[in-house]
Length: 339
Image (cartoon, rainbow, N blue to C red; front, side, top):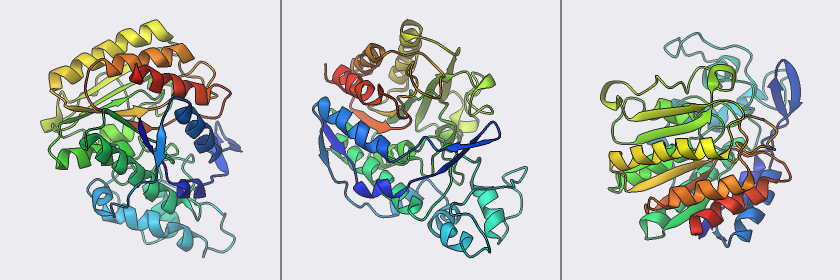
């Protein structure tokens, strides 16, 4: 299987992460790339550097105002006397239609949903090349590859069109799906991360040209809390083109696979000709975020089930945090897809 990675993605090295009122070490660390790359190579992946597709495909999904913010905010933030090394918001508007301030502090609050997406000097470069990695993997699938893997980091599925959150800045799966659509494909996005892909849902919620499906731990008591509930089906032209399949905390392999069957059936009914898999590995039983209880063998079964659709697969790395099982879980998924 072809795989893509750019070393500049390691330039994003976040230090902070606030959870339950405590300042913790950020789990979205550059070391993830080392572990995941080894796991992919163990499954036979051959890595290539991505091509640079420029800003166009990114700006097709994200607002220019937001992209200006991502590109420039760290420099502006550091001009504030006694500012922290990382951009972390401390105030948020109550609605997206609120006035847009000139202040770096105010713009951080407008464009960063939470404290899990700190922006440092290397964040924009890493996010840019994470998106280019996704686009190059999409090119490989359009060029005839049965499957391609994008080791995109930072991840993307919590990023809305103008809002970062949950370790995510640019929505890589969405950017790739829009690129596929532009080239005449009919994509479905299947998100198997333990957290709901709220940014992906938000971007496509009013659209009928991309099907979005997410299997995740029930957000009633789990991040991202406000999105990912079963009644969210899309709006306007997109009504019926968004499917959320929330699962009880601690769900294991068999129940998960039964739910995945429903997702794959919906993809067939949509008439998709390519699946963009938002491949979170944090549903594993040993993942530090503790949402679901999928085993390593369960990941192999998930890969095999998705591959059984016979559709081309674009695999987009999302979550999956450092644990002894992380690399082996990726190997299992990729081997399951490869049969």
